[in-house]
Length: 240
Image (cartoon, rainbow, N blue to C red; front, top):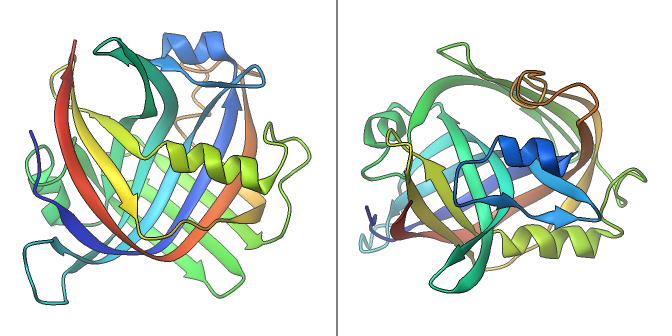
C-alpha cells in the first residue's frame, strides 16, 4: 500500500517516552525489527498528536480534516536491501476520527482503533487522556513546559533527544497480516521540541506486566511540538 502525499499541520504533538530493558523489548517486536539502543536501553512511547487541515497534497484548497490521535511506537532498526535502517515500529494506533478508522490500511496506514480523547491545555500546561472504545488501550499524560530533561533520562541533553526522535521519521505500522507492515514517512517543514515536566503518566500498554515485567520499563521524558507544517509520504510495505 502506498498512500497519496498528505499535508497539514501538527497542531500539538506530545512524545511520551519510556526506557526499556532491551531483551524484554526484543520479545515484543516482530521480525525484522530489533530495538534501537541508547546507553543500554530500548526506547518506546506514545505519540499524542492533534492534526488539522489534513488533505491530499494535490488538493489546492487550504482546508482539511482534523483529529486527535495516539500511536504506540518503538524505536527500531532492521536490515533492508543490505543496509541498516532506523525508524519506529507502531504496534497500535488510536484516533477519534471515524474516517481514519474506516480508512485504516487504505488511505491511512495500519489499523486504527476508535477512541475518546479528553484534552485540557494552555500555553504552558498539557493534559491528554485517551481511552479506546474497545477498552484495550488507555493513555494519560499531564505536564508543564520546562527547559530541561529529567535527570533519569537516558538522553544527556534536549538536543540529543530531539535529534534521536527526528531520525525516527520512518514508521511501519502493524496490519491485519502478521508479516506485513504499512510504511509512512513524516516530513516536517521545521523541527523544534520543548521538554515537558510530567506530573502524571499512565500507559496500559507499557504497564502490562505480561509484556513488560515489573522493573523493565521506566518513564524517560516527554517532548512537545507545536504548529509544525508537515507532509506524510507513503512507503512500500515491509514484508517478512
